[in-house]
Every structure is written in C-alpha cells, then in structure tokens.
Image (cartoon, rainbow, N blue to C red; front, side, top):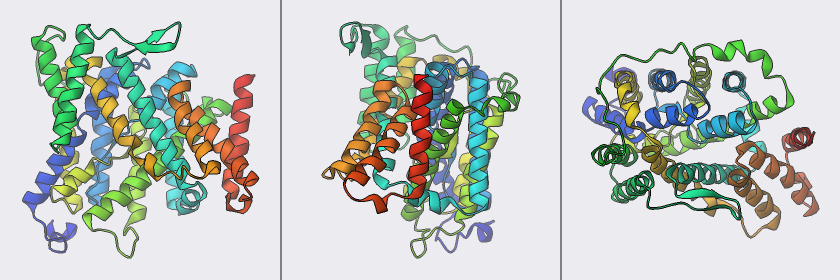
Amino acid sequence: MEKYFGFKEFNTSYKKEATAGLTTFLAMAYILFVNPSVLGDAGMDKGAVFTATALAAALGTLFMGIVAKYPIALAPGMGLNAFFAYSVVLVMDIPWQTALAGVLMSGIIFIFITLFKIRETIINAIPEDLKFAAASGIGLFIAFIGLKNAGIVAPSKATLVSLGDLTQGPTLLAIFGFIITILMMIRNVRGGIFYGMVITAVVGIFAGLINKPDQIVGAIPSLAPTFGQAFSHFDQIFTIDMMIVVLTFFIVDFFDTAGTLMAVASQAGIMKDNKLPRAGKALLADSSAIAVGAILGTSSTTAYIESASGVAAGGRTGFTSVVTGGLFLLALFFSPLLVVVTPSVTAPALIIVGVLMVSVLSKIKWDRLEIAVPAFLTLIAMPLTYSIATGIALGFVMYPLTMTVKGRFKEVHPIMWVLFIVFISYFVFLVE
C-alpha cells in the first residue's frame, strides 16, 4: 500500500494521510446537506439526492485516489447545482429528469474529450478573463440565493428586491450562522462551513426554530425516486434550449475542475515541469463521476477546492482521497439529520461559498474595456436574470465583438466564434 501510493517519495505516512482525508471531508461535508436542499427546490426527493450525493462523492473520490493517486476529493458542485435547480428547472421550466439527462450528456462529452485528449484545445480557446468572470458571476448568484433563503433579501414591487424583515426568527438564525461561520473561517478553522452549519442547527433546535431529529443514525434513503431517471428522458435533450443547458454544464465544470486540479496539485508539490502527471486519469475520474452522479440522481460532480485543506494538513497521495471517499460512504447512515438542515442553516454556507468564488475578480483586466464589458455582463447578468446560462451567453456573444472592434480579431479563437453563433441562436430561441 505504501509503495503503491508513494509514501516514501512524498515523505508521508498513514497518520498524515488519514488526518488529511478527515480534514478534507470535514471541509466539504456541508454538500451532503446543502445539495439535497438546493435540488429539493427543483422538486427532487431530498432523501434520494442525499444518497446520490454521498455515493457520487465517494465513488468519484475513490477513483481519484486509487487510479489517479491525487489527494483531491470530488462531489456535486456548488454553482452547478444552483444552475440545475434555479435556472434550468425553475426558470426554464425543464423537468428535473430532463435536466439530469443533460448532466449525463455533459459527462459523456467530458469522457470523450478526455479519452481523445482534446481538452487543452478547448481550455485555450476561452479567454481567462471570461473564466474568471463566470466563476465570479456564479458566486454572486449563489450568494443571492443564500440571502433570499435567509430572508435577508426580500421581493419588492417598487424596487424588485429590498431588505427583508430582520426581526424574524429564521432570518436572525441565518445571520447568526453566517457570523459564527465567518469567525471560524477567519481563524482558519478547518471545516468551518460544516461546523457553522452544525452550530446553527443546534442553536435553532434550542430556540424552537428547528425540529429536533428523532435519531442521528438511520437507514440509507432509497435511490428509487431518482435512479436512472436520466435515461428515461435522454431523448428530450436534443433541443436548442437543452443543448445550451448541456453546454453550460460542460463549460462551468470544465474550468472548475481544471482550476482545482492545478491549484491543489501545485500546493501538494505534485506538478512536474509545470505539468500534471497522470492528468488523463484525474480528468477521467472527474468525467466518470459526472456520468455516474447523473445516473444516481444528482447534479454535476466536480473536483473540490476544499481538498486544499487536506493538503495543508499533510496529504500528498491518493490515500488521502481513499480516506475521504470512505467517510462519504460512512455518511450515508446519517440521513436523519436532513430534517434539521433548514434554509436558515444552509443560507450562510451559500453566501460564504459565493464570497470565496468572487475572489478571482481581481484577475480580470478591468483596464481593457474590450475585456471589461463582456466580463462585467457575464458576472452581473447571472444574479439579475437568475440564470447562469444567460450570463455566460451574454459574455460569450459580446467578447468576439468587442475584441474585433478593438482590432484584436486574430486573438479570438475560432471556437469562440462557434460559441458566438450558438449563443446568438439561444437568444433568438428565447425571444420566440
């Protein structure tokens, strides 16, 4: 085992790797409860989503650890689940079963481009500034959902949105949760988001705002309500609006995974000559997890930047991921705790994840108007139109135009012009 994972090469041990695996799990365990809450808003069975989330995370992480040998964990991604529930299902009025088929299709495309090694071509085609803008826009969108769920932001006929009633118990509980979580994260408490949810739920129970669970450990919820639903609606994805949905799933996860792999691998000292060893296996782990997750019944699975917390704790090999994956399997028995995870408990996590995602805004070239305009439209349109797809579409339509007018036509990759036509068709279809 030690030889297989290269303990000697990375100067590590079982104790270090196990501690790192536990640290990574605690840092991302919140997704077990946030994901069912988000996809539950789309009409999906929360128990089934909980099981699908844990299994997708476990299988994807174990694949990453055993085959690719990276200390990187996978789970259904924040942002991707929000797009799935709030944009695709609730705004575009697409059945969640069809949306799962879209996730499955994006996973199949992922597997295809990974096996044929054409991923780099696509990565290089889309400018970094739009990648940063998309990530930031998703962060704003997620934070907006969190503020709305907390009751901090409320609808208004006069101004569309306004400050909510901050005297309401659930809203006060969410504010408390946000503050306590932020304090822990500022103090670098590993797993701060997860611990914040636990503390908020306990306070909510004592305050009479949340019902006390009947038990902590229970039977694993059935997958029957979601398992295989993607197959039954697969023939419904071949429409313009669903192709845009698939493309958005693909693009968002595409760069989320690439950025996470590079960042965590660099931190762990795995990079060699600025290249990722076994990159193909790592990407195959991610793409396979997307397809498997869709079949089980959850939104797109992706590599988690929270894996960096495990690396900071000493994780250097795939054994870290094996431990994390095993803990996700163990978590399957804690589904009774779903009853205490109310919007007041999950809202702080959504807001804080949004804060973390907009941190890349500083990397956008704001002093170049031909770049600033499409970047701004991308990030601002997502929360204002309640659609990640619309934000990406606006940015990808505007970018080739502004670059051409500026005289930088040759810098626009042909793939960007293909996407320009695709998204123009998307807007024409919406008008019709």
